[in-house]
Length: 256
Image 1 (cartoon, rainbow, N blue to C red):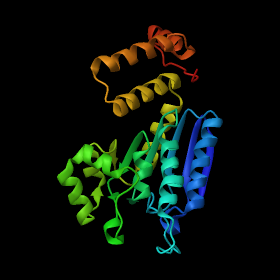
Image 2: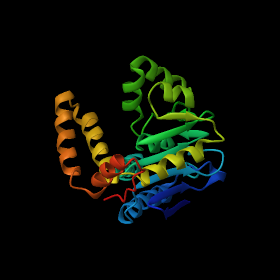
Image 3: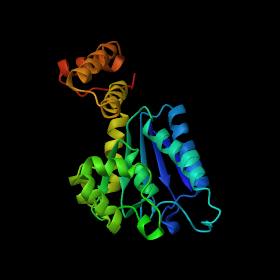
Image 4: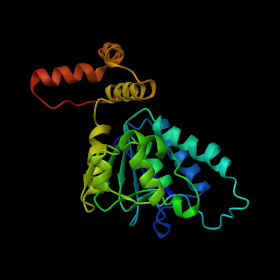
């Protein structure tokens, strides 16, 4: 089950099937994509993704799946990849609170999120070696980028799970937080972003994505920054930020 709620410009998307450790079947994946569509149509200025129960997401729900008839290509190409692209392309800041098992598709959901706070008890990786399958959801690209080829293949061949601390140290995710605090800490950060200068955050997200995807250098990135800054100069939040700084008060951004 996927729960959706919007309050104070923050969309909260919750994986709510704790008995299954939030493993996702096709219906849940479709509902998750719809939640992000709702968040955008509702004008959410940030999104928070989290999971109920002892795990964030244990991956794909394969209970009842017959490997002899399973349409793996259809599942990956027609359902999973579009969902992850949808999440990654959400125009406003996105946050995830990761705890417990973050496996397979669960790892993919985190890869597709801007800012990920990871509990110190998290177990991150892919159980696919035991299934005769391979890492998916973009895991190969991220692992090779962060760990190099040797460590990546070590993780894949052995099926060893990363701890939250290891994942953050390697630059996979944002911060490691005690398990008892990760949910509240992530929500606080997401709510602050939702109350922030939304157009400036959107611009930074576009620039960071372009730097990553197009392998931009310093001067190319600077040109993007300059154009973004010039466009932001006409926004209400830009004027409010300057006025608040000059008056030595806290700004009151509206997202415009």
